Length: 95
Figure 1 (spheres, one colour):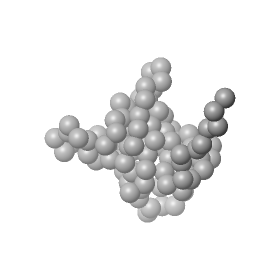
Figure 2 (figure 1 turned 90 degrees about the horizontal axis):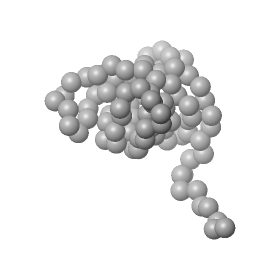
Figure 3 (figure 1 turned 45 degrees about the vertical axis):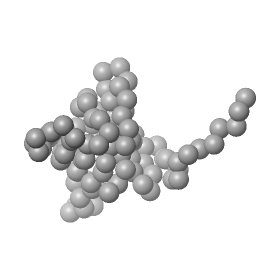
Figure 4 (figure 1 turned 90 degrees about the vertical axis):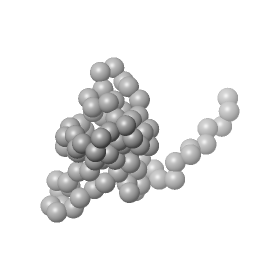
């Protein structure tokens, strides 16, 4: 068995919270803003992992308000996304 080397710079930690987000831009979009929802499933210093019904794709830019610290706004880039059953699992990188 080969040694597996973690490629991530930051450790992920499990986290559960609802997430209401706006897709600000997408490579194929006409600059429309799309509202959607999902749930955060893990966090790191550099980003979050989410599950959503919205078909996220790499390159999408998402924005959401921090529910714990009112007034904080987060923006992240979808780095990867894959379909899991009827949902999409995506990795977001804070920008």
